[in-house]
Length: 476
Image 1 (cartoon, rainbow, N blue to C red):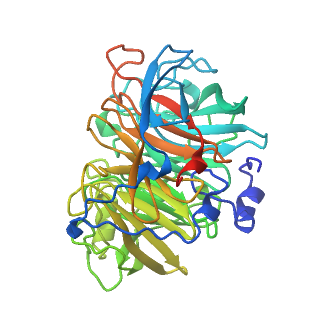
Image 2: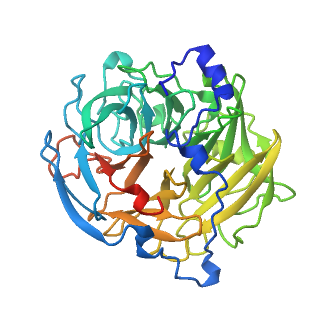
């Protein structure tokens, strides 16, 4: 499947082609068919959700690999017969002469039309104060902004992935946390802040930006203001309708959808809405929920998606939906589409506060149903799920956003069983998990420092890893 250009004909025809928006994987929608995850609920008192034999992959072993470009060494615990590479470490020089920015975060993998060659588009959640910019001055959205995206070229050769090169593809934005791929071959990069000129920046922030994966240099940054100015996290696109779903990373968070005026052309504007539980006013999903119970959903309009007071009040968009009875979630982060539904991670939701996974299934244009499909009953089993991706076999991989000493990426099966796929020692979180389009390689980021000077030896650098092995041996 070739990368689609962003021309109008390709954007409009994606609906007819039924392209997938789930993590950039060509297998995703077929693999997710019939997904039905048996839920673990904190009140059940069940602590036996561990998957036997680590999902069929057995015990984890210690491996150390070194990036030949930067000299950075990384140790991971992976299943037997699996291997990994580390590459594109923060501060490493890129093809365009720019240093690789800090804080590797959300990411997706795209095909190129050439067998065994892929593009990764990667966010950078850089949180430095104004004055530490990235990219070329003539291409920056904000002359002082140090965040944005980089694009990486990777190829499969001689039985393993090879990093080719990287370049800046979006610059002048800030706190680019997550986002999501589109069916037409672009990445939607989201700013997780509403900071602006009052904080010393030269532009207002808190927007979504589109980055074509086929771009060979820096894209022209255009804030998609009608998609909302709030503390963005991730997005997922329904490939049938072109509707974009958006999450908000705050303890008091809303779940949004954007109805584009022209499906596939988000710059043409549209209507932002917020989820409301039918016949319930300000329903609180964060605690006291029963797994598997479907609730009917309505959507309420957000009249002003770009409020003037958003910098002073990051909840300015949320409050508009709340005033119309919309529901509240706890820290919505990961978001992806599969099998006709949108799956969202509430990082701090649940009676134990360790995380929830929700499924929203649209039913026509006006509404749908939402249900809790997994809730972590114990921090040792799963703590703070963040980014999510689907595996070739249709199970899930969850990146933990946690400060414990062994952060993990964990598998979640359709039976609601959890197992560790990979560990590392340290405090940095896993981000941006995404399979290659053929399912051979799992790419992921280790975020590293979000503030400080590039190349500072006292800071843990962001880096990208590629993991490959006999996926068919287990449930993934």
